[in-house]
Image (cartoon, rainbow, N blue to C red; front, side, top):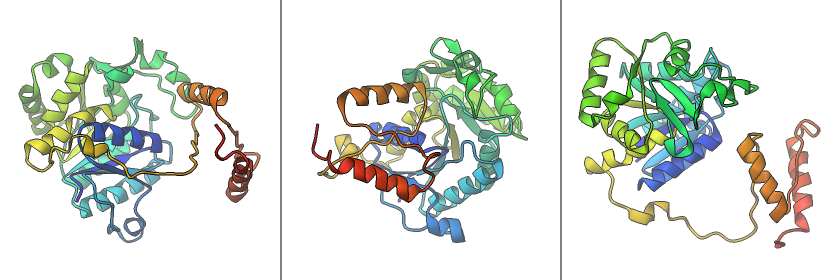
Length: 316
């Protein structure tokens, strides 16, 4: 039975979240797409045994209605499996448009869970993503000056997350600034409670260090819904341990069964970081570039890749 049920709006973000949770001592399993039975009938198919289940969707840039429907179906599957808290994971650069999908999905989850309030925090200081006075920074640059303003699908032209989320939701959005977070989890928890009681639906919470993320994680221990990047999830495993629900697994949380045989690495992103990794791979291993536009037939693409790899298996 999972303690934490996670809904991620893309595959790589889901993997990053799983990695964060495992480092925190939780076993984690990532599943691709909504479990089939949940999608058809609104009931969960058997899910793997793990402390955290991450449902990886491709909902970041899909139409808002589709993103909401898939996210709600994933939520139902996770709740039916026994999840005690739901985590909605999106990108640390808050990738979205004026129409969503962060706001619409969060609204739907708040309504489904009946919680009335949730935080929103994409910060991951270790990776250079920080939120200060409600503004998202990438390194030392504001989000809208970081290159993300030129993103072909989700151009981010405003670094003020209170405004960005406010344009996507019918709910109200308030800032919880750095000075409050610095005072610790108890003060932060009381501040959130006060906002909820005053009718605010969301709080953008500042975080400029990993210690802030741990404080935020502790403060949301009893929240039905948490939304953010994978960074804020680093504070969640300790909550379950404090409640006696999560044993101290040590390194066993990251243990995987031994595997043998050839391996393939697939890269589907055109981000600057991925292109750098592909460049490194070209210098150290066999690489093949597949063009899905030139060959839209998936079976033909797979056959092409297998034929190319056949004579190279076992080579360095």
